[in-house]
Image 1 (cartoon, rainbow over the protein chains, first blue to last red):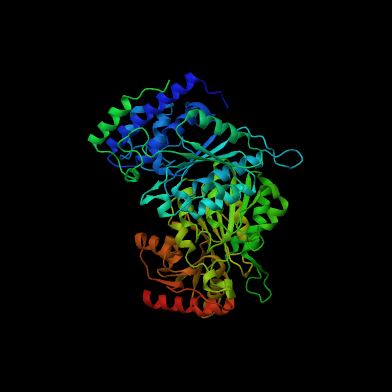
Image 2 (cartoon, chains in turn orange, green):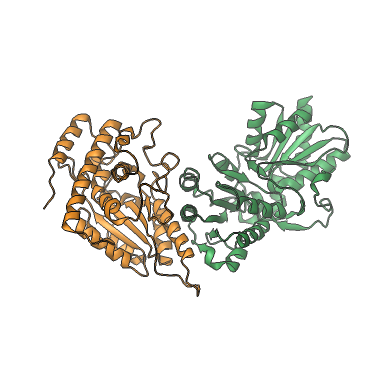
Length: 291
Length: 332
């Protein structure tokens, strides 16, 4: 875990803004796709790919890399944009999103984009895949006396939506991770409180979410999802967990960065028109870092 | 006569033929494969002993994961382990896996192209007294429709052992179908087994066969007994063991159709989507001949003794013999 300097924070803020602009551009070009989640998760993806992750964009198959499982595949514009900006493939390629022959499928598919760890789209099964990865590493990391080592050379990260906590499979994964004390597993929930049909607490109440997760033997950290310093500290704490998996409940603002769209659940599953895209891009281009 | 090249069990037709549940062969095969390859891991959903995974779990506890009664988790966790280079075998009853967790198998294993072997035990009505809720008759259909997925349904415990070891060495995902009840031992250790290849187990001593019987899994013995009795009545048949349902041995099926011009398929599964459907797809496209289908026809199972149920649903040797005679009439 690296120290997050003021200069680095500023750099991340600029990078996240670039990524948001790419998200708007690619969604306008695609003419369909999800807007709220990708914009809301831009800061978190930025700190991961530009500060937290052990990875090498020029050598995506590097065995020692941290693993990133995207469970809620519909927010893939933010994954694709962040990967492009960090050097996995040309930023220009983002314009092929959702088009025939593109590596950037509407929901991620490993067959087309082998750099990613999992194909996703159907909700509720990403966490369990991350649990399987973490278990596999625990098998490798046995001490000579057969006990499980608490140290790990790499982490398994899982990005999830709050809506997919409606899925039973998610809770099955939570139980198994708690049972096996997978401290090499760190999940991040995009707690933006919206899903397709409306507000999560109206569709299917999740609260008290943190208490539920603690009861499942997870280390739970609540954070504001748009503050790099806070996010960095949360990840530091997560990595210090020695006998529990950690879940970071990141309280995010849907469509963060574009005032006109923010907090409106209707942006969950639609893309901006050309005119709406212009409005969003104008605001994003005027963005200046906080210090 | 039994195909002499295959070195089948010479006691197949004796009253005292050895009977072993097909699932036992899986348990032994997994143990053997696990000894050879330390990357093999096993996962189970609270049915470790009845799926015979206990042999592996006792020998390699550090490589065994108990997920509880959670079949969706069973296969998705297995997918994640596969992503890290492990070779997961995950077992449950076929009603639950691939029954309950089909979409997870589709997305995280088949679509994701992850090497996971899904082991579905207690397939078919021969589960018996537990009743229809526990008798999977749809699992072959569910699995053979998935791209990337191999589907194997061994005829006895020895073949199940060989199939398990073979599946530990392939690259892609697979479904291994097992049965609960004791089944007569048909093959021997010397009998060849190759994924994607089907062998003729029964053939006329001289001359051509007039009907080809294509069978999979636990009913193979019934089909062989039917063939033998038909021979005594002067009807020459060949019996093809279709344990490898996908990849399917098209050449073997087409060549049998060309010789006999009439086929009967036999399976403890719904005819729709099962091997009846699979064989019909190959035949319709390549060499159309009449086919009679032995299997469950649009019904659920129920409680009873295995042999009662096999007979009730028309899958016993007498039903097979009738189907052979019926297809002979259709062909002429």
